[in-house]
Image (cartoon, rainbow, N blue to C red; front, side):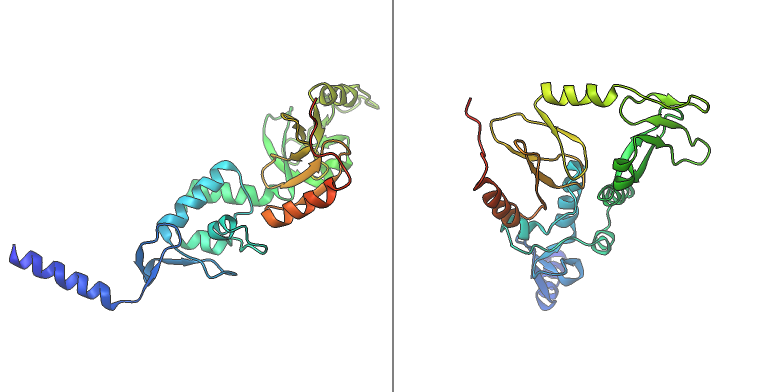
Length: 240
């Protein structure tokens, strides 16, 4: 028992002699071997806390992922967690796959091919510019109408449909508006005319009344300032 106590005291003394830091989340003193510093700010975290934070952000589809302290403090220029730091703290394969997918979705959109039944990512700008979509998967290359989802087989001739008209009618009746950043429909669920796109990686904020993109950002002070500018000449709330 005395030997165990002696070893414990030696361990405590050894810990005290090593350089430590205070984790900005759990506030515990940790050895520098466990530090996960965020480039661009002075905030330091232990790997476990930062790993749990990244996991929750990835689960909710939030991207890019801001430093948790910068976000809590609503910093005007918050640091962004880089992929090299995500690798350093040991994300699981599933989490890193989610990271990679969200990173791609900033510039891409997911399409579901009605021919091969597979999903794939295509460039957002290319998708927005075309009515006819072509499956990017080599063995398939099937074509279909973006508006009505009808398969377009070779030899069909010119395709016309009312899909866009029907979609626009659904958007009108459901009090939805297309996000001007990514084109996805977002439904209005309250009296506030500030719409936030829920598409992962989009981060678009737009106005329900005029459909204008107000800002594309996750930074709270930037969003707040942009909303104040826009709604100084527009109506933020509907009270009826």
